Length: 395
Ligand SMILES: [Zn+2]
Image (tube, rainbow, N blue to C red):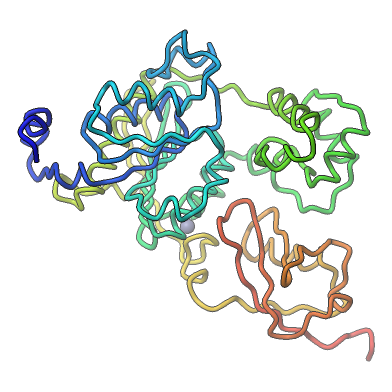
């Protein structure tokens, strides 16, 4: 390593077990460049990480400036990831920074193959779940963070070893988020209109029907479906979705101190993962920070072998499901939903996504056929094997 770099990193090289070569040759992905994302990116940049990949699909707003420390007034209206890159390169020009102003769910996984650690600094569960599932699929460590007011938490996911975000999702994912998505898709446009009214949003019924026909059937879909999917339908409908999404967006309380504690903890975990344990053991539990009473608590989370994302049952052969030719697709969805505890299954047979009102006998599905279950909570679909029982109505 060049002498000027050795001098730059001199004080951290003095940490017992530190290996600057490992740090300078590692790549870290940061999804979400808000309060925690800015802080975490700054910490890792200062430490001389080899490459940072920043992904965020938002632009800077005035109300971000109380806590998103890489931005100032002149940045309002500009993409967060791009501006963060500019600032980080001034902080440490020896770090390579790639910035993407887009939804990470549009990323091709080949772009992420060389990432050593995934970091989630996202503000919504839909994308956090997606990233969790991608990390498990690619067997990459994930450091997940969240803040709210004076509270925050950090969870390290080592696929196959520690609990993932879904292992205890029933207990840890806020009930309102679960309720919002806990609806099988047998819905009518009237249901969506009613849900919108409950959120004090009135829109013309024609628009509700149009949204419905495009697959937006719940508040969850409205909030979290990647907007790029609708841009080809014309700017009018994507503008409407963005307008409604803004009305639905929860504005959580947030302050810089909480973000910097959480990002500080997260950055040390990233560095420990990169070092493979030589500077300290990686935290294999949930870390909860309570800034009101100044407490940092470890919460032990066991990995669930039946977890529908990281569980052992997902690693082996497809699970067999017994169905009757008389079943409708929505019967099958109910079974799958209960079996895997996923709220929003879509079922794929060959290249088709099956409709609720289709009957299995009409689709000509045979025993041992493989169906694929899609859910917004998983990056890759779950394969299931069908076992057909005799048609009971014929006897
Ligand atoms: Zn899991």
